[in-house]
Length: 110
Length: 115
Image 1 (cartoon, rainbow over the protein chains, first blue to last red):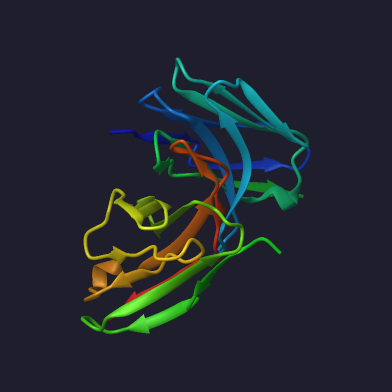
Image 2: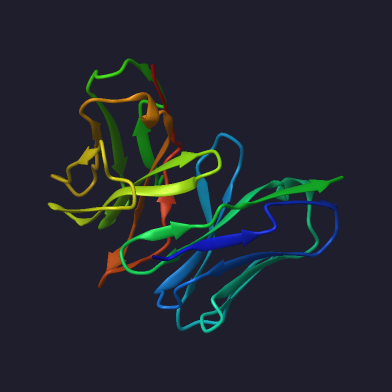
């Protein structure tokens, strides 16, 4: 059964720092991996989707990488801002179903 | 505006009283899914549907039913709710081709309390 782990569970950084969020999964037979953002009490917003054949995807200050063989993905956030404060979740699609990690709660302090 | 809507957004009910949470999407997506989110347990998939009349169990389907009679709607039915179904529920939709799910779009969530 696919298991997805996110480390760290929580992270607090000063504004302007570059940071990396980690996601690991146990079964490398995946179709894609998605990163989401969730604000308190709100739904999830998709940030990036990486197909299994891709190594990375970029959107603005966000860059996500995927290493299927090692079962790892990272989300890089450049020049963090207080508005980036949220919970970030990764999810893997291993065929019709998404398995989510527990999330990383990010706090960016002004 | 492309969106996934859920109703109701908040619901307090009592044990055993049947309820339905509706989910509708206007993006003509093939794939729809229901999740529940609980502290310490994260997001877990309840049921999903690859297309009209095609549904399948996720990780935690016990106590839930779904139907997909139309492409845009995917209601979640609790025939006899119990307190352990108190949770935050999310519906999502995505383009689904060849068994591969594209970017998922989530609804705003339904907070359910079962007394």
